[in-house]
Amino acid sequence: MKAVHNFCAGPSLLPQTVYEQAAQAVLNFENTGMSILSISHRSKEFIAALEEARHLSLELLGLDKKGYVALFLQGGASMEFLRIPYNLMQQKAAYINTGTWSSKAIKQAQMLGEVKVVASSEDQHFSYIPKEVRVEEAVDYLHFTSNNTIHGTQFNYLPQTNAPLVCDMSSDIYSREFAYDQIDLIYAGAQKNIGSAGVSLIITKEEILGKTKRDIPQMLDYQEHIAKDSLYHTANVFAVYTCLLNLRWLKQQGGVAAIEAINNKKAALLYQTLDDLDFISGTAAIEDRSKMNVTFTFKDEQLNAIFDQLCTEAQITNIKGHRSVGGYRASLYNAVSLSSVETLTTVLQQMKTLV
Ligand SMILES: *Cc1c(COP(=O)(O)O)cnc(C)c1O
Image (cartoon, rainbow, N blue to C red; front, side, top):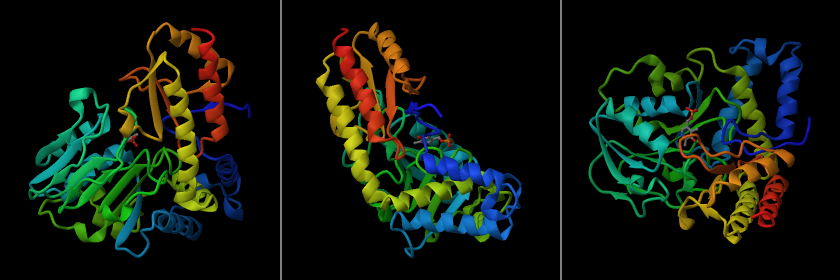
């Protein structure tokens, strides 16, 4: 394969060994003589893989034996925007609005009850994280988005509430240590730091479920999926297996703390480079900058074409900002190497001689 520096925001880069092992499983899954694409989701081999993935997903976050259960379900993180209020909302829920994905989650919750937006950064184009959010009033749960993939901001603290805390961690789960055990329900589309697209991970405390009086369609009912061990219906067999391979890889790297140290280096190098170049503007408030999705623009838009050309020459791809906000975005998920970031910073430095 040619050496491309892929900064895709999702589906994200995965480690080379994960690609190799996944490719091998397509040809011959664990010496069964069958492809992973053509084995039963109820075969003992797949069930073993699913169970290992569910277990590792908790262990790597330090959530083993703490009352949590992990599910691998289909529908992406967007499905959870609806599944969460179905399962948790009785009358009123609190949401923190920090970007496009939070806004979408709010819209879905509004279909089932009252949503109180307790804090929002919409007034400044979602360029910052509201501080010290504390929800005293009685609500069924408080929802926030730990990392705002499109706007490049990230929570560095935990909102406070007595209600269950729910977090969309699609784009920073497994990237850093966090007070995971203070969150009651964590969910994430797999395609950013967990595995390939087509499956999402839901980690929930069992004790928060079963409290609404609402009839929940079976496909949307977490308790139904828990009772069936994530096999209420055909699982996304290949995607779950890819998640397992990637979680195993993460464990081999030393787990979340070890990957966080590398992620910190990557983000520090890129932000330092951007800050030193006076023809670039960051788009996120400095204290809230995301270590996973680094967003920036050129003050003079005419520089875009030059930068694009240099990126093409350096084999840097998928660095354009989300279509809704424009500019540029480098996503630094776990599998993106420090050397890819160095290539990008070299290109940015090169711009100095051209402006
Ligand atoms: C990508 C993303 C989503 C949407 O995930 P899908 O799996 O495409 O539904 C939701 N929330 C956040 C924070 C994301 O980054």
